Length: 134
Ligand code: AMP
Image (tube, rainbow, N blue to C red; front, side):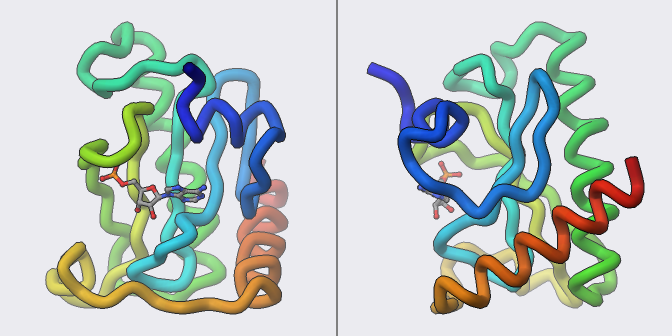
């Protein structure tokens, strides 16, 4: 069965899209630790990120870098945190989280509860920044 993220890529399940190219897709995490918390995934479904072929693995991180830089232009932060868990969704993904201190990366912290309009506004701004940088 296709992963929930494959279903997002295929448009079966809606997402707050940030960026896309032929191999990768980026969208807002629906349980964000911070405004702009984004997931970057390969379109080709692979569960464990270390099982990705090296060229695609490298490209995934380069794509995540571009997306992270676009997020930074919209969400002021000291750094862009990158983390990989993949314990819940068996489809490789990088979390990009705008942070100001290390505890901002803690997944034990309460998640933000954002309204649909807020997600849409953040996604639109980051999407614009990404397009302008490409
Ligand atoms: P993990 O697999 O442990 O890295 O966690 C999966 C992440 O995917 C969590 O942060 C979820 O909030 C996020 N997530 C799950 N389903 C969706 C969805 N439909 N849209 C956006 N984010 C999702």
